[in-house]
Image (tube, rainbow, N blue to C red; front, top):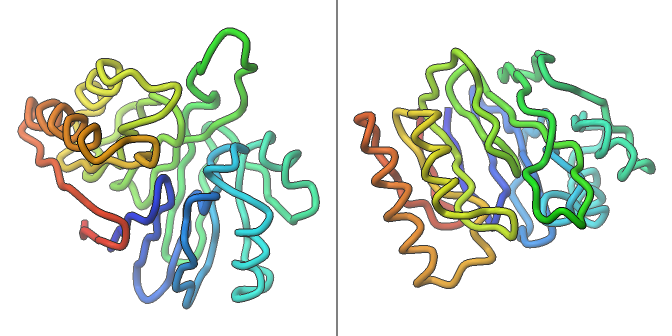
Amino acid sequence: MRVTKHEHACLRLENEGRTLLIDPGSFTLPLDLSDLVGVVITHEHPDHWTAQQLDAILSLAPGVPIFGPAGVVAAASGYDVTEVGVGDSITVGPFELRFFGGEHAVIHASIPVIDNLGVLVNDGFYYPGDSYAVPKDVDVALLAAPIGAPWLKIGEAIDYVLAVAPRRAFGTHDMTLSRAGLGMHRDRLRWATEQHGGEFVELEPGESTDL
């Protein structure tokens, strides 16, 4: 399975000639969506989905199934979104999906906490959305680790990578960082990944790594 990082939090997975798209948000440029079998939206914030992005996707892949938590179903009420929740497992083409977590990380006490799901794909690739949700009893082969956000403190991000202990990891959710800040945060998460013998991979938008 190939994982491609796109701008900010958007991820494209390819397996057996099919494609799964995760979190095509407002910062994401147009994508090659050949053989798209599903779209996963982890939560309702616009940096993870917009109506404009869904319209563009559906124009290229009419009827493609879209999955998200209850908050996404409500926010995207004009679209046919299938609700999924914590503990659910579904199969979409060659992709087996399991969902974890349930809540977005706290941004500030004045801002309501919303639904958020982490997604485990084919028991090897894990992306937590905007959360520090750890997939229990899972040997994570590749972790897409949030690296910069209004809700993210780098010390907590380090602790999160230490808790997941992935064999490999790369940083995502990075549009809010300067190049200097991105380099600093990557160094911190590299250290955390290496504490359990893992490898940290630096991916720029459009670059890929394989499981």
